[in-house]
Length: 202
Image (cartoon, rainbow, N blue to C red):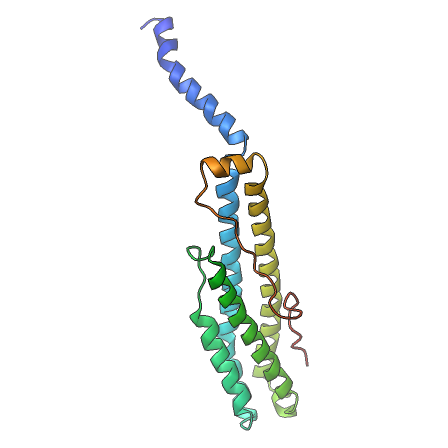
């Protein structure tokens, strides 16, 4: 094979490499990258809410030992936890605004029930001094802060993704190649001060 034939046979490969480098530099990969980042951020939101849900049974049992007359409050927490854990929003349903709203409302109800439980706990000095309760309270407070951070990170990830598919050149790539990826809803506060971590200090 002479030099001319060698160049002719390598031309398609060189053209493909050149085209690939041009496309990678023009933002064609931004949309799927930002989509995956938004999904990963949502995964962290779910992880933190699950962490909170896992703390609740021990917290309820500890409170029950000292506050047996607060059955209504304890039942409200248990029921709110059951409802919150029954509604799951994963990557496949993340673009369903109705499902996301249901998830938010269930988590807000659980936050409210936990707040009422903490208020009730104030009436029982022995409970407030219990080491197990203090450890659970500290873990719950840390988890609420992690939830706030995870929600913020998800909102920022969605904002970047939505901005990309609404502005040039992302809008062009979205219409040509990624039209199946919709504008995504953010996880908005649905109750007063829902963007702040609840106060659970004693």
